[in-house]
Length: 162
Image (cartoon, helix red, strand yellow):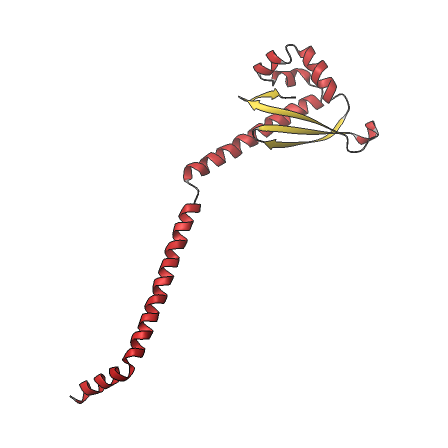
């Protein structure tokens, strides 16, 4: 009996404090759980689906292969290998712009590659490639003289889009 009385007296004295502390702890746990759930939902929203990741990787690989193709094409043009460069053109480009290799040489090679090129850079944007040709300063006597060519790759062939 004595023990029950002590417990009743203890809860009568400290009961409201104990319930207040328990309530505050419950509220804190509730807030932490909601925050964890919110973070999980945000992570799910920001997560990139596997299909998109695969598509992004395919696009990167395609762009890498196309840049390699354009690099080879520009190297042919710089080294005056007209036949190889002409053979890399798409059929559409050949029928619309350069019907013969002579036209290609006259209207493209002689215009863009007549002066010695010392360097070039390939930039890409929206499927089009801009080739920035830097002319040799010792030959031209001018600094930073550049020319730009816009190319598109279509079925592993080059299309010149001037």
